[in-house]
Amino acid sequence: MSREIVGSIHPSPEQFRAFSKLDQVTPITMLNLLRFRDQAVPDSVADGMTGRDAYAEYAKRVGELPIDIFRGKPQIMLSGLMTLIGPAGEEWDDILIVRYDTVSDFLLMATNEDYLVVSEWRTAALADSRLVAFASS
Image (tube, rainbow, N blue to C red):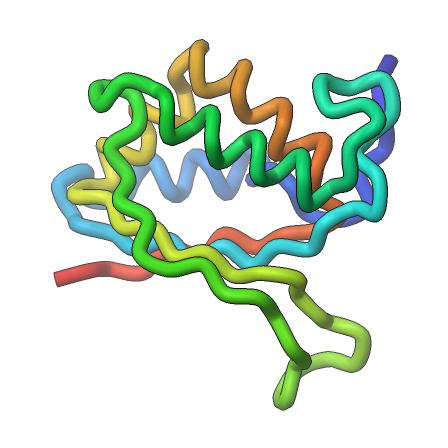
C-alpha cells in the first residue's frame, strides 16, 4: 500500500541525477537533518515502533552492511534543541554528519539492493529530513 510522505524523505529524480553528475572522486560530508515520526509508518518494517527507535534500527543495520556497501564514516550525531535562525516551525530532532571518501562511495551505497532494503527503516522512521552534501577536504 502506498503512503503519503509528510516531508522530504527521498531525493527527487532530478536531485539524484544532479548529485550523480558531481565529480565522482570528490570527498563529501553529508549533513542529515532528521525529524522523526511519533510512530513509525504502520504496516512497515518498523510497525509498532517510534520513529526514533526505527531510525536507531536503521543506523544499526547500515552499520552492519559490508564495507563494500557502506563506506560512510559517521562523525557526530546531536539532538536538536531549537532553530535560532530559520523558518518558524522548522525544528529538527537530530542531526547526523557522515563523511564519505568520494561521491562515488555514497552513490554505490544509495543504489545497492541490500542498502535499499535497510533504508525501509529510515523511510518508516522519518516525518521530514534534509540531506545536504558538502565538499570535504
